[in-house]
Image (cartoon, rainbow, N blue to C red; front, top):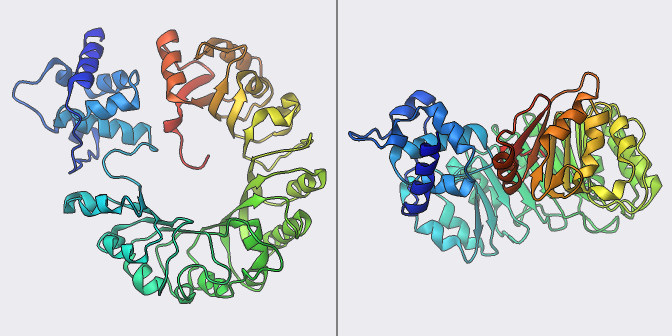
Length: 446
């Protein structure tokens, strides 16, 4: 095993850093095993797939990127390993963000490489640049219009008409009474494959501004297959008549923005509850910014069907009552929320928790008092009792978890440097009630 690790490191350091454009995708282990077999394979090539995947867990994603360039067989094995274990990592041509100054690079790709593109975020103010991606539009599954893209013209004829495989459409920075383009005619069409739509006005303006889009009602009624809708507090409120006077049925409503709005959180949350009662949505995921009043917090807690709540900034010492409906909870700065023992006890059915930044000691109460928590993701972990010199004391955390009756096993997701440092120091990241993984192993719903 040691010799194999050494050879991986040697190959990763010495190989030429050349990306293979015509990506070879292995669909199962058997296919991967025969990809690129050679007459005189090296010792590492003779290893079984399971053995290779075990070795890969000791390497960084950057080393894996290099390793996959050494030969076709290792490329196939690495690609299969990444696809199976780290869904957020993209090799080859995955999601692409196009800026005006970068779009020329897309033109330089060969046809085989262009066919691999399934997702594009367009960040350009040049409307003519859409012609550069016309041949790609039919294969796109996700298309995002960035908030610096001032598109002009007929959006349907120029863009959506060609997006025959589109499943996810996101439009940012809506300009007053036009969603995008010169007209809202595209909202009168049917798009049978679209499951998710995002309309984001950056939560700006107020009751005096006319962000009302009457065509929204037509769009949703012509496309009943849409399962989820993402928008802002402000845009939801400005278009409330479209939703109230309709038979729209969504599985999920994602809403975000500043809670300190002129029209008040009481009216927004009252609207949400009315929409819930009429069946407009089944569950809501809320991303709330800048809570400075206890009244706003109380209103948020009153929203029915809320399964996921993320708090960006909290300017008061808020109180957490028992929240039995909540399944996911997150916050940007964990230290703002105060008594985490009470929070852990009152988030009675929460299964997933996300912290952007927190002290390692802060999540200990969830080990002790939150039996249903199964996943904790932390972007930036500060040192504490069980985290020193970049290494997490998993054994101690595991013992803390054992003290809780009927506790579920917890997977903790951390940045790769913490994961690798802990793995090399402790030799194992899999214990009875605690597992440590890289953040890249999480899905996108956090």
